Length: 274
Image (tube, rainbow, N blue to C red; front, side, top):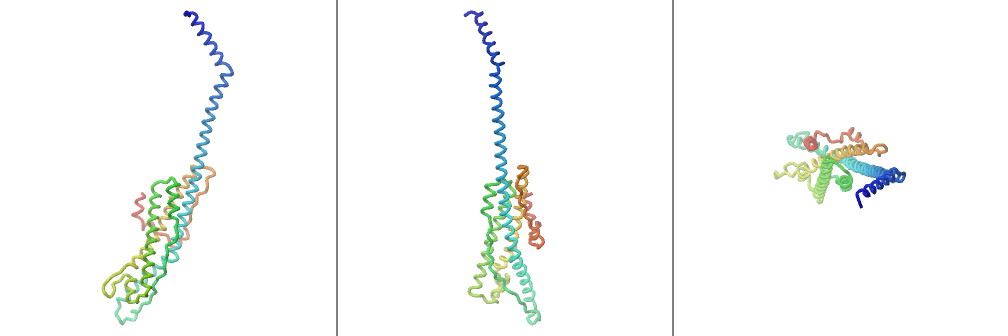
């Protein structure tokens, strides 16, 4: 084949390609390809957005569930403090102070006699939701470090209070069976020197610890709720229109009754979260 024949074949091929490119068949083929690509891209975006909404909705629901569990925990210990712990602590120290004052008076002083009542009511640790709450927060929520630190503090406070109440109940059982005489019981009840100069502060320390640890449970539960509510509101904002309402517990009555611990008592601990 000579050079002239090759150029003639190339010219024919070029005309055929040009005819096909300008034909309706080629245009339809390209358009369908582009349309399929755009459609697939759009479908992928819709799927991703739908999946994201579903994930947000699930986390919002788990956040609300966590808030409810934390609220029930805090509210349970507020009730415990209101019904038992405040009276136990306040009356104990009032009686102890009165007993020490009267003990220092001369034997024949008219005010030497002092009457009080031992508080040996058994107090058991209420049921709480630490296992379920921990599972939700660690496995179902995408949280920052701070709320997890607060959760850890709450779990330790719950366990400490449980152990202290158990210790106090064991002490009560020990002095009640058989009943201990008052001259022997009073020093160990108030944590004072006995006739032999020995001091046993087991019960006294337990009373103080019950009060402080009950406050710890309340304080950390409320702080945890605050973090969870903030997290929930952020999720709802990301979700947009139609997002479930975030649960916001109200402790106004407990505040009015003076049952809420003060932040000032936890100043050094709060610095950890700064």
